[in-house]
Length: 491
Image (cartoon, rainbow, N blue to C red; front, side):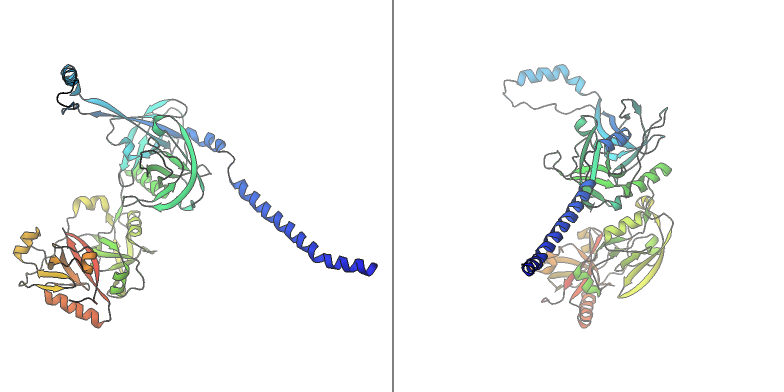
């Protein structure tokens, strides 16, 4: 009997080991899930108690001119016509008087001496700004400065006691899925808290310097200018906009990232205005066909479409250059370049690496100030002689060198040069890529074109070099852009 028991025991050993391993694995998974659950807040109450005194409601007052037009419309013959006319006659003069208009928003205190951040659109045009604090008292605020580009405004109040304030966090550390909490004054209902997660990052809406955090935390009208907190109680965004078909929250809200806001706030506090770096170029993204036409390894960087008077021109930059690096930062696209340049100190000398005709060159550029450039530098005009007229069809385009008559017809400067597009075949690739009659082609293959023969020569050179497409610099209404057209189409 003993040998049989020993054999049974030996046969049961693998099963016992299997169950031991299964139980151990279950315990490991359970512990992991419990650890993850511990990271989920059971309540936001402690966090709300800690940071709510720094969040404020903002009320603005604006004087609105009296209404001088019709105050309403009643169909002729309506039984209310006489009543409505009598009402207008009795109250009409009052409608012409200036009146006061109020608006509500949110904000938050960033220093104990009373600096407050909100949205520019909350206080824009306001005659008076009142700040209501969580504790219930109210103080008037003075406008320090605004930045419409990021929709940020900085206010200042004078208080007898130090104010509760919050600090900015690093928005770059926020990850999709992280918990966040929004605070503000939605729909004028008073102090309110909502929670959600980071739904997406690096969103762009319509601004040049946009870097929004998207969240599903409820944001409604009146929340504008309020803070978006991480779980450490630091501000990682300023609630600015929502995407909604009905004006209410549907879980798609946008907060301007704190790493953008802090730079703006620092400049507003020091100068009362923003001071952004300015390179002095017009740029566009590099597409796949542009990259092929230029012989680039990838469709990255920023294509320079125009170089007006300014820092880049002084440094020798040219239209057709592809900016691949700025001040040691690799340039992926135009949006990234604009943000890097804007965040760089005015007057700083930076190294800009460009790809020019397949070769890498480094230029040293001393940045100007964008705000001054927008007021000072006119668009550059290129002076070239006029060529004799000719007309031809190439790549689906009917082209003619610019003449005085054509310049007048197209409303161009007398110094404009290039080939005028007089007609576009609607079945052609050129039409598909947006070329239209009235456009002017000024360059082909990164060289000037003044005549049809110039363009034909550049097409031949591109084919001989094994290119599948040629890069054209096209201007419309003075605005330049590059377009790459295939060379394997009938001419």
